[in-house]
Image (tube, rainbow over all chains, first blue to last red; front, top):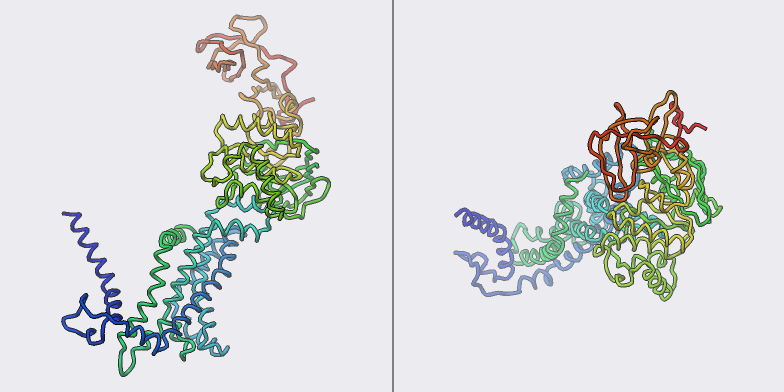
Amino acid sequence: MKTALRYALAALAVAAAIAPIWWLVTISLKREIDHFASPPVWIAFQPTLDHYREAFFLRPFGAYLWHSALVAAGSTILALVLGVPAAYALARFRWPGQFRDKVGFWILSQRMLPPIVTCVPLLLMLRQLRLLDSLAALAVVYTAFNLPFVIWMMRGFFEEIPAEIEEAAMLDGESRLGALMRVVLPIASPGLAATAVFCLIVAWNEFLFALMLSQTQHGTTLPVGIASSVTQYEIKWGAMSAAGVVAMAPVFLFAAVVQKYLVRGLSLGAVKG
Amino acid sequence: MSLALEGITKRFGDFTAVDSVTLEARDGEFVVLLGPSGCGKSTLLRVAAGLEHADAGRVRIGGRDVTEMEPRDRDIAMVFQSYALYPHMSVAGNIAYPLRIRKRPAGEIAAEVRRTASTLGLADLLERRPRELSGGQRQRVALARAIIRRPKAFLMDEPLSNLDARLRVEMRFELRRLHHELKTVTLYVTHDQAEAMTLADRIAVIHNGRLVQFDTPANIYHRPANLFVAGFLGSPSMNFMEDGKVTLGVRPEDIEVSFDQRPGWRSGRVWVCEDLGNETLVRIAVGADQVTARMPGGVGAAFDAPVWFRFDEAKVHRFDQATGEKKR
C-alpha cells in the first residue's frame, strides 16, 4: 500500500514535469486550429511542420539559434580558459595563511549576488564602450557569470588528483604547464566536460541579460527571440513552440550525457571548501 | 655522478623542517635517509628533487649546481610512496612517458620499454591500466618509469611502505640488486630501519631536521653517535640505564643471561619471555627497571622466574646524560 502510494506520487510528479514539455512539443506540431480546441487535443491531432518552417524560414529564429550557439560556445571556452588555471592555482599553489579559503570564498560569493543588480551598471558600461547589441559583449557577461562556477568546480576536481602525480610528471621532464596540460587535465577530463556543459546550459538559457543588452536582431539570442514573438497584436504560439523545442533539444542532450558527473561535481563543490 | 646537499635549510612558516643539513652521496652510492616520521627527511628529498625550494643551501648533482633549476632540468628520477602512476595511461605509456617527453624516436622508445619492462618482469602487463595492477606491480611500473631514461640520480620516497610485509622484503632484495646493476647514485627515504640497514651503503640519520649521524650501517648500529641513534636503530631497541652523569646503553644481544645463579652477575625476574623460533627475547624486571635480552631460539622461562645477567663490558655504550652525545 505504501509502495503504491509512493509510485502514485512519483507518477504525479513526473506527469507534472512532463506535461508542459508535452504541450510545447504538441503545439509545435499541431495546426493552429487545434491549438485552442476545447476540450484540448492531447494526442490525436493532424501533425504539421508548418510552424517549424515559419519559425526558421519566414522568421529569423535560425539566426537567433546561431547567435545563441556562438554566445554559448564563446563564453564557455572563455570561462574555461580563464577559470581552469585559476582553479588549479587555488587547488595547488602554496597560499599565505588563510588566503586560499578566503579567495575561494570570495570567488564563490560572486554567485550569491542576484544577477539583476549588475544589470544597470553593465548596461551603462557597455553603452560607453559601444558594445551594446553585440554577441561578444554577451559572451563576456556570461563568462563573468560562469567563471566562479568553473573555478569552484574545477578546484574540487583538481584537489581530488594526488599532487604526487604531477610531481612525477615534472620530474619525468614536464614543466608545470606541461604537467597540467598532459597529465592533470586528461585525468580531470570528466570533470572538465561536466563543467563545460553546465556553462553551455547557463549561457544557452540565459534571458535577462540577453534581453537588456540586445536592441536589434543582430544581438538577439533564441530565448529573447522566442519571447519577442509575444507582441501587442498577436502571439505566434506555433512558431514560438517550434523554436522552443529546438532550443530545448541540446540542453536535454547535454544533460543526459553528463548528468552523472554534473551531480558529482555539484555536490563536490558543496561539501569541499 | 655524485649528489651533494650543502647546508640545506627549509622552513614552513615558523617550523624548521630541515636545519642546515650537509651530506654527499658519492658516485654510485646508495644513501638512505632514515628517521621517524616528521623528521624532515622527505622534505630534504623534495629539495634535492627541486619540488621544494630550500631557504638556504645548495644542491649539486655531478658537481653542477642545480639549486635554481626546475625539477625537469635536473635529470633525476623519483619514485613515490603512492607510486604516482598516470592513471589515464597504460603500463607501457607510463614507462615510455619520460622518453616521449624527450621526443625520442618511436622505435627506440618501444625497444627501451620492452627491455625495461622485461628487467622488472612487467612484459605481460604492458597493455594494462595502473588500476588493474597489484601494489607490487604498480611499484615495479614506478621503478621502470624511473630507470628507463638512465637519470643521473634516483630519489626514492618510502617506495616500499605501501606494500605488505612479505612483498616489502622481496622488493628490498630486488632494489639492492637493481642498484648493483645500474650503479646510479640513490637517495632513499625510509623510517624502516631494516630497509636502511639492508639497502644502504651509508645511512644518514635525521632527527628534528638535523643530520645526527652519517655512516655505514655497521657503524651506525655498533657505534651510534648519540642517544637518539642508539635508541632508533635495533629491534628491540637498546637498553638504557642511568649511572651518575652517564647513560649506559646495551643492545639486547650484548647481554648474557643465566637461569642459574652466577657470582657477580646482576639478578632480576623474568617479566615476559618471547620465543620467536630463531631467537628468544627475555624481558627482565630489575626493581622498577626493565632490561631486554636476546637469547637463542627455544629458550623457555616461566613468568617471574629468577634470572641472572651481565653486560658485555666491551659493548656498553656511554652517553653524556646532558647532551645525549657519545662519550669518548
